[in-house]
Amino acid sequence: MATQSETLNVLINTIKGTFNNSSQSDAVVSINDQKFYVMSPLLEFHAPLLFAELKTPTLPVLSPDSTLSEQQLATQLASLFSLGKKVITITDPELKKDVVLALMECMYDKPVEITLTNAQDVYSAATKLGMKLISQKAEDIVQQSIKSVPAETFLEAYTKAMETKNPLMEKVWNSTLASKMGYLPIEKILEFTGKMSYEEIMAFVELEGFTCCEDTIYEVIAGWIKSNSITSDEALALMSKVKLDLLSSSVLITKAGNNQNVRFRDYQQALEKIVRANTQHSNRRAGLPYEFALGFSNKTYTGYRKVTVVEMKTSDWIHRFVEYYTQEKGIYCFDNHSERINICCEAMHLAILNNRWLFTRSMKQDQIIRLSATNHDQDSCAENISSIHVSSDVCNDSNKLQLFMKA
Image (cartoon, rainbow, N blue to C red; front, side):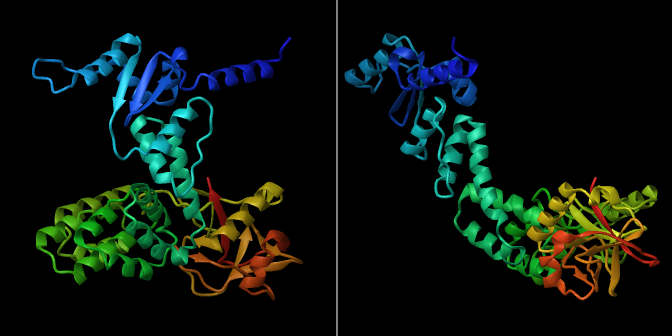
């Protein structure tokens, strides 16, 4: 008696064998004169947009004035009626023959090979045919390639990607740009955005998922307006893209409040909202992308919690932290500090190697910094970060840093 696995293999192989088999199909898909005989249940599962066309087949309008030749008419009638199959006809020069073939074959369990070279063609075709899993896979391929781009060269790489005029590249890079904003120095952001046209800067500030604080968005827009000659209406329209209620109190009052391009009514509403909240408010449009961060032990940070001694003793936590620290080449900072300060977990010092205390000589809000340890510089500390542990020494400092992680 066949096992469940063997039965499944037989079914899969049977389905594979029916690909483009006219006697084993109930529908015909014709794409740019490429004809495919398919089973409508598979079409419904893999390409719902194509399947929807089966419900409302389009028949040719035949009239005395028809320009169809006798041969063309006979061909259409044969395909539409003689075969007794539903027919979908698509004419789209952008759909490449080899890509269409690969997508039709994948309905019959043949994997689609997606690379950076063909990702755009696959994404475009899959999107048009309603094959969401394949279009998402193409998008993921591009997304994965971007992950390896260092923060220090990201903006240069982004500019080159935009020059390709590749819609998929533009979509993924724009999405990644917004999420990377929290990693980038404000000086580089200002230099990058300063070269944009009015249309480009408007599109930029409307991106979704910015991880930088709203103060950065304000500085970008205010700096661009100051450096470019535009009308007052254009300046007001651009400045209106700043979410005033997300600004820090100091920037809202000392900068936005005195900016002629900020509508007084909007400023007043934002100020009232912050005052009514009477608590620390979030100043970001989207959550931070960092799994771990440094902050003062006497503070709380939205979306994050303090790391505990118990979890720091687990190999899983160590692995996650080391992977994060290595990938980001440091750790994100919630606050500013200009002097040496030790890093603790609850009331104990954090250390590497043989009880070498971890510390930082300074830190800057919204920046990634590298840690140091007693008798170990930043490079040496990074090399030995996998030995991070909770020291047996109590941290009696009145001002100390704490490791935080996403809640």
